[in-house]
Length: 519
Image (cartoon, rainbow, N blue to C red; front, side, top):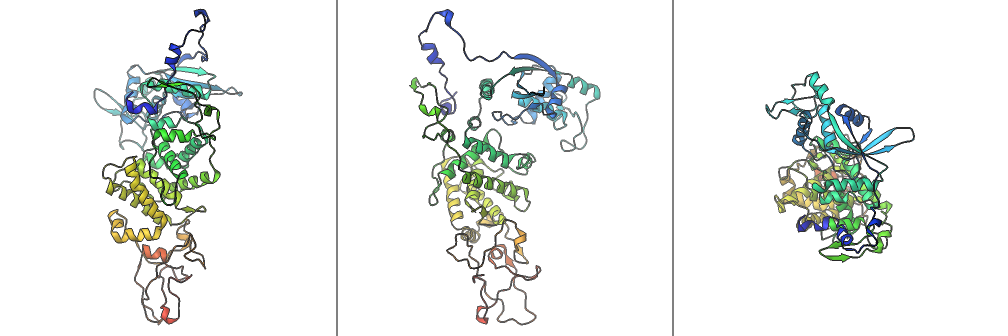
């Protein structure tokens, strides 16, 4: 372990135990808090595959890593099984229910079991290490080439009969499962963000809910991420890190200055574990660091800080807005590869979540979804213009994102107009569309048209662009007004005219009201 990692890892009290004087005779020495001895067994590949599909094996324990093996590593483990090479045992925690059924929680071996399932589902091939030929278990048209070579039935049967060694524990608590997982991972340490995922407090649980909402396959954008429609990778704890970071920033947010400094992993861990007394929950033992003893604090017995319901609801609204943007092809470009950036970096995703949160007032967006999508593209473009090839989670990059957010939230429409005038909108690749009719409320379900009688004092008032008259007086047949830009369209007053015509603005001198009137 290098010096930079010291803040990311727990320190044991083994030295304290070795240095402590004996409390009695050697015959009195006992090992406490032991687990029930596990049993060793083996299951066929076919049996494990059937249990995975029958949900009798659970791979989704919260302390588990995401699927981090790429296709080549998964293909390699399949070849090892075929050739009877050593494959490390899979560790299960077996839970029995009153109806006689059992569920096996995978403590270690998720990557191996996922590889087996993907191979038998036709998502990855077997690659012969000698001939380099790729042969598939079945033809899955969603993966691989259109024409595939399929394994003979005899070879399939041989693979399904291969035995996988397993170790099964019974009667484990959740904390014991997590402890086994961490001990097994000593050879391949968890990344610092992954270590945050083993914290269980109201704030950490909110992060998990937000991750499920945002990046989950069922209700989130998980499928779009898998299909490379969204160029952001939440695996290896990145999603947990980004969401926790955004939440921490917003709880400390100042409307004038924001939060100037980006907290690191140790600060986020402390924030997640913050207790109601101001200490840190779960600290109840002595540790040694660099030879100096740190006494246990009483805060280990405190309750963790709760999450205010209003904050939870606003964060959930922001997360769902990201999902709406991604799933609508009109707005999804904000999260895709652009000419200035191949991927959405963690610092960009953090800024996006903060921006969307702050652009909500009383549960409603103060800009249209179209404008929000464009602002996200501008945020990313501004980030990469000022930090080319160095978009990282650090304070200098955050200062750039922060300045953008503060200006955009203070006056969204004025900010947008300035970016159009400066040419930054064009540089980012955003095309200002020319529309043939004014926006109607049914065009965008999140667009709330201004109500009558609103003034500049209203915090949700969006100023309208005053358009010059296109004719001196009404006379049939009237000439067509020039097509309005997307910017003008958003500020134009509602119209009851036909969808195929543009909004006409009467000449104030002719007795009518201008477009900037109180309509």
